[in-house]
Image 1 (cartoon, one colour):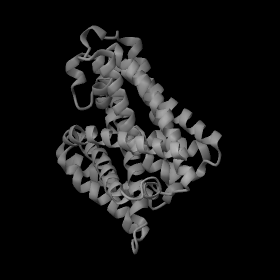
Image 2 (tube, helix red, strand yellow):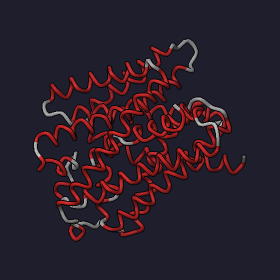
Image 3 (cartoon, one colour):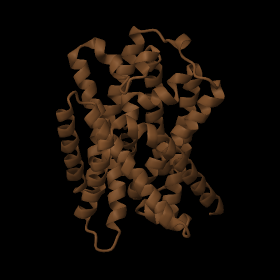
Image 4 (tube, one colour):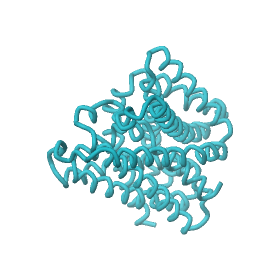
Length: 336
């Protein structure tokens, strides 16, 4: 497993519904025009630094779950952080399952896809951390290559539409959006890095993971932002704006994109469910199959509130929570 397995887990875990659909990139970066590109670069840099910070804290405290990390860095309030983070992961998985349902044409097919995906997540969890890393090792390269290839092909065929874009606030607002974006992703990453960091044995490997993982995400994010900048504002406002990059290439291209989108949402659901399941499994009398069932079943129920509603309500709150958690880890590292 080692470095490449954890790096693949990291990338596959963070390329979720909002990323692969293009929705969160359109909101956080593309809407700011040229300034949004700098915001995306800034977000990638923060992801790199924050990932190393998380790995350093996990290694120093020798933890195997986010709950143990909270007990080390904030003993008095670990119970509250534990509860907050459980909700954090539960909502994150719910967004992925709701996205899977929303990406399928009919309501019946969407419900079937959601149920089948949830059952598959549960099946993967039965193989433990090694099984999850093995699955991620296949999914992450497919996701990054597929999304980058689609972006490059689009950029060869269509001009950028900078003149039609530009949200109020300019560069400062774009950098603030990039900070919030990086923080909520680091909030998610903390959970599955705590569950897998033991495969990284040296400081060099931890830095390599931070550079490789955030580098792959940053490159994919930058190319997607540029490709999305070729779309008119009305298409950027759709729930799945990336579909407009490939729809002109025919039915086959649309089906391939649907597979990529499913892989992105599935892999993130697996990562979040693994982290939540590991924590629930630490409770007295809870077996791993039961913990895995809880970590998948509860988000499955919540996902029926709908993809767009969950993204709109949850992501800003998750970003602020991630910012606070990152600041607390930074303070812990300073004291150490």
